[in-house]
Structure formats: structure tokens, C-alpha cells
Length: 218
Image 1: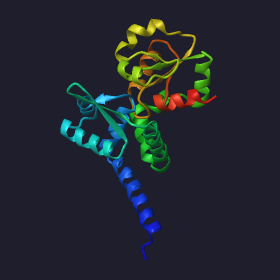
Image 2 (image 1 turned 30 degrees about the vertical axis):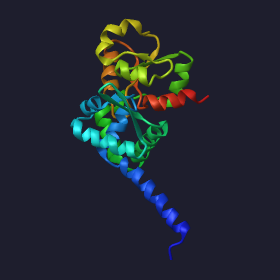
Image 3 (image 1 turned 90 degrees about the vertical axis):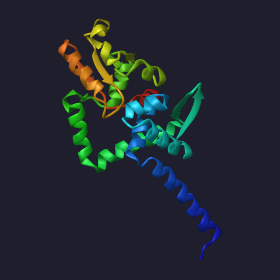
Image 4 (image 1 turned 60 degrees about the vertical axis):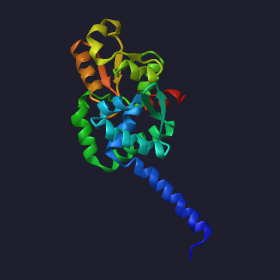
């Protein structure tokens, strides 16, 4: 027998399922990862994701229908952004859970980013040393990404400019490098270049979102 409360509960789970389904596509997860770095036009998202503009637009519309992203118009351009920071939080949590239950993801991360380059120091201790200015935090993302989602105290040096900027870094301090999260290879390339130049450097797995959360924690 269907009761009003059962029907209401069914509607709740249906909506929850629709939201979860919107995030179940690899292409849409990639879009969320891109938007976690800051707002982008459809064309920029298409270029970064490797999807066609038409497919990208469809994926964005699906995410927008479920309230995960929002769109504003600027002239002829449609600019998308993550609607709620909790969307990025969910994406970060999905990655955390996936690495616990799917060992092949840890292997893939090791292959993509080379585990020997990662910091052996717990992230909370790294953040503490950065707060106390005992270490240097370098963001090797593009300028527009660092400006859209900055991390307090981080020095933005895009990978392409790293060689020219080496003289601005202190050799007596450990340098921690981050980019777009666990699977981003930019930080690994930067750490290799820094070590070759005589610096003590490590890559961080944390994204700007996660680092900001840690910076806010006393």
C-alpha cells in the first residue's frame, strides 16, 4: 500500500538519484575538475576536456539542470562555474573513497605523478610550516586559475615560467609544489626541474580547494 509518506520518500530518492547520475559520467566529472580551478567558457572547457563543444554544452546543461553548475552570459560567451563549493567537496570525497576501494587508482596516480616526488611529510605539517614561513608553497597552475582559486601564501609560477623565476626562490627552504590535484602532472615536472636546479622540492597531492580548507583550520 502506497502512503503519502512513502510516495514523498520515493520522490526524495528519485531526486537524489538524478543528482548522483549527473555526476556519474566521466566527462562530467572532468568538467567539474576543470571548473574547480575557476569559471570557464564552454569553448575553454571543451578544449581542456578534449570533448567537442556540442558534447560539452550538453554535459553542462545536465549539470546545470541538477543545480551543480551555474551559467552567466558575457556578450556572446556562456561562462560556467561551480554553483556551490560543496560540489567540489563531493568531488574530492569521491576521489578519497575511490582510492580506498580501488587500488588501481593508487597505481595510476603513482604512474602519472611519480610517488618519489611526493612529500613524505603529512599535509597538515606541510601547511603548518608554510604558515610559519619555514617552507615555500608554489602553485604551478596557469595565472587565471591561480587568480580564480588562490591559496593564501602560495607563489604562482606557471610551469612555463619556472626557469626564469628560479632566482626568486629561497634555496634554504623546502619548496612544496601543487597544481590541480592528485592526477595533475604539472607539479611533478616542476619538482624535477627544481631538484635539478639544486632545490629541495616535493609535490603535494592536494588541490587548491583542499589546501584552502587546511589553511582555514587552526
